[in-house]
Length: 603
Image (cartoon, rainbow, N blue to C red):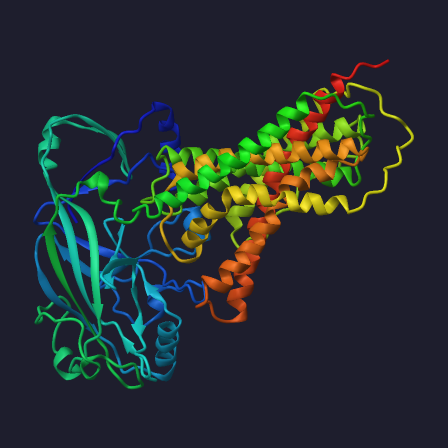
């Protein structure tokens, strides 16, 4: 395969270090994907990703089904850590594309299907598994009309089961449409970074770079019944007659034992005005922008209301004794440290994504970035946890010197990263925390605990109810995020997500301050954990919303294993949100209480 490549330069030279790191770890890349310019004589091959389904959420290898294999054998593409954790498995395929050559080709004919293969194909078909194919880093897109509206998906089904029928039919013919944009060299020097390293494309090379760029990859799948006696006489890439899709059932390829399936495909190249930087627009098309803005305006109203209450609180003076240490202080310190680590990771990741430094063209990049940031933010977690412990206890003695729980993982590399990077950095942060001065209380604390007056209703009821306000800030955006994770839709409106994150931080801080003040006013000095859960209780509503999403939006999810897997992931997400939002609320309340009592005049 011959091509010339060039890379959009980054906006800041500082990120060249990140690029060099990515060159060896296959992790981060500068904005945009590596751009190929093809000539009319170039031949390229599509790649295939894992088979995926919203029915089971369990990915399978493409070649686990009896598909045609490449002539040179199956070769796996390099995978980064994010791709591994997401279950991506990208392999080469026999689907050949000759630039600007429209053709109909034969691939192969399988051996007679045995019982196991028939059972597997039927199961994958009825579980709605999709074949994910990639050409020049673009996922294949399927477009269909429903009620006069164009609906688009990525991938195409393994097969289909007609209504009121017990028979299954396999998709064995693909009609590809490749959109290409003609590019002319500008003669301008461009600094690029690719798999070959860093370099400069000269003016002479730029003239040679003129050619065609692939800006779209679409497919129309259908099932065709061929005569195996005729098809087996053909060789791979022999020309065949075009097929008009879709076909009647009697002309479609049924899945049953001893059937021999022939695979064919057509290729049509279409010139397009779409330019290379805009080729992802069709995948990242933002729908429901008004809904996002409605969510933001709703959050602003909540913030304004709470800000008025907080302002009123600051106009008053609270004259109470400062609290003594909370119950389970070590657990609280660990949770605050972990929450700070998660919050920092989420904030930095969203900021980078909002500014376009995490392109969807680099698969697994977002997750890889989150993992790396989480590892390096262990220093902040250790520092915050130990310093808070010293503030509560007045000494660093009794600290367990633990780095926190180790996540269970099947990947040795993840464990290595955890022990070799996160553990040392967390211990370093803890060491810095022991050397930092503990935060001094502005007033003395009574040795005898004050009796808390009886209340008509449990104070924890108010704490749990407070979580509804932060949830109102993020629940609309949560729908789009869940759809991205579980329905395979692209999510790339990180600008909106960044705004929602900022509003969520403000709401969590205000809610926690208001609840802490209300507890102090009724002489309830046990505010530590309540300040944490006042904002952290939003996780409860996130988890309940996840159950609602499972019941009403993932109705096709089948089997208890799939449901348990979904609920397990939802629980992990809810715990991470609790640690993050709870830490925001606790830190704000801590400094709020510190400010209040530092302003109290001791008689």
